[in-house]
Image (cartoon, rainbow, N blue to C red; front, top):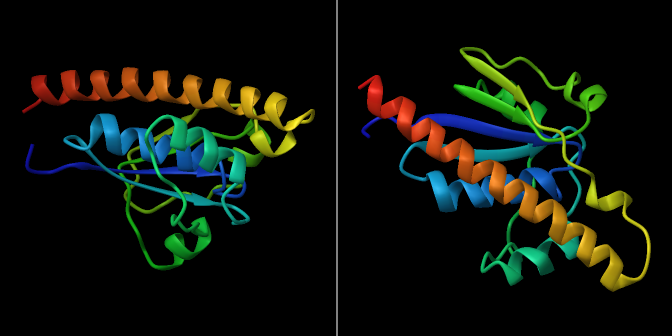
Length: 150
């Protein structure tokens, strides 16, 4: 496919869910999408996310975070913006010029998980696996749609 769809994942801090979604879409949908992620209030990537993504073969150690409003001010354009946080936070996301589709996928926030280190990791793995499955389905569907509208 010559022209890829530009997609942005957004969550609160760009430290967990949006980073996982970006990494998995790069893995499963790189032929269909150019993908980035950003946050409403960027913070360093959650170390538990780095650890569980490493278990999945994806290295996020050197990945930075971005501010969604910086991207908006720069005039970035996206075909699809996907929020991966709760609805109230998703409503704070700016409307990007030229955006054709906005999706809301709600996943639990790993920064709120409590318990022992292993319990927190297990909950983070569950979110990672949910996001991975959602991305696999999304990439497959996008490929099928792109095939029929060529």
